[in-house]
Length: 134
Image (cartoon, rainbow, N blue to C red; front, side, top):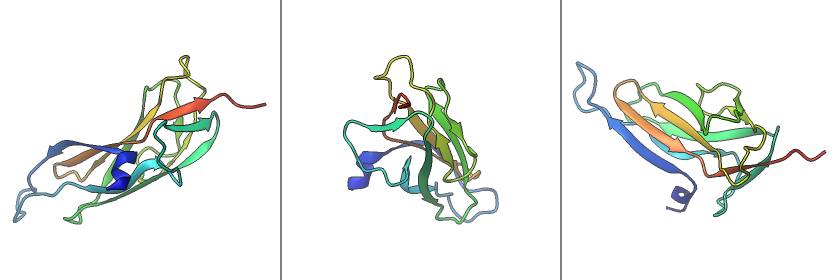
């Protein structure tokens, strides 16, 4: 599974189906991402210049055909990049200024849930910010 090296899934919770359902609820599954669209796997992380607007990639499905909800965030939270809409599958993200420590990676996290108890957390590869070239 070569793509698994480029991102990490953390199982947060697997709930049972809502009342009246005939079986257990299945959690959503992430098939691609979360990562900047078109970025290859690189062992040393990804490097982007501050101010760059990046299209993020995330493909998720739910076996039960439940509606899927998304919540993107950034770790560490400062310096803050900007998501075009943190509640959609594939927003854009504007790269923030470099952190004080240039070796400090930024991670983009996405919580994927179906509101029936199925929740996943996906994490991007390490992202390093390069100062803007004048």
